[in-house]
Image (cartoon, rainbow, N blue to C red):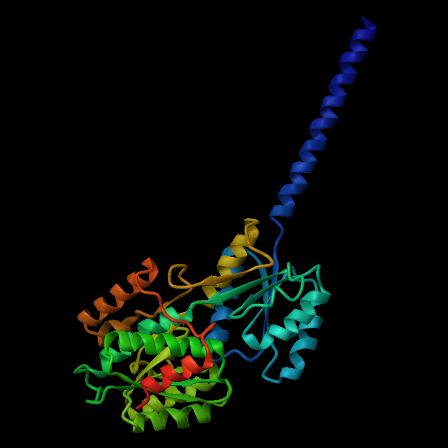
Length: 370
């Protein structure tokens, strides 16, 4: 009997220890899954562009508010000699995920990510070259900005041929790009395609500033286009594009914003300018970053790959704010909504500058040259 009781007690103790161990393991796993993510955004520029960088910063705020992550934004300015060493320094710090963006950061990121395999990087608006190395710690986000620009071009073509108070009789619209690259040209290709879809006879004046910070030159080029009878101009130039919006105010002509909802950003500080921004092509860097971190928390983010996001994924769109509602007639709004649905369904496939031969791009620009 004593031996039997001893055996029973031994079994109870063993079972108790096993259950305790399992409980500890589950607790540890629970704590690991609930661990606060530390996410830092490294900008190769400065906030205040009311556009691309500001949108990425808004994404970080949402990541902190909605997903409970610890976040920080670091502004590196426009001196490109500082970008790579600064990114390397940040990679030595205690961050789980390092976010950076724009095509100009491609080479610095490729070097730094290869040297810090223990770190994870989210790269937006461009992609590392996955064929040239092991970038299994990098997730790249590409945007179908050509889809949003298609809608903007269609709207601009409708405006320039309308009876809206600031539209003239000439079928001329404008585009002011920053530095000429594939992303800026992708905006342009979509813009021209959308305008020609609505009106095959449309003319599109095109200029490039040469960088993304010279707002004085952006203003100068936009003024020249307005003087060429353009009555709607679409600047795609980040900080430099603010100069083009200044030109719209000077000439009292329409403009289309980019990346962020620029009319609403100017609502309180410059309402006269805000009223001239018919809409903005929204490049929802904020939404795409929140989406990426949500997927990471779910264990579903596709590390080591690039993903392309567009209207369907709500990473691209146009602003339908109070100014748009007031300025744009209902028949025009219906056209834009129908075009958006056709893009999502695949009925309309918008051309892209990515993979387009230089000769074909030049031919497209020349076909609509005023």
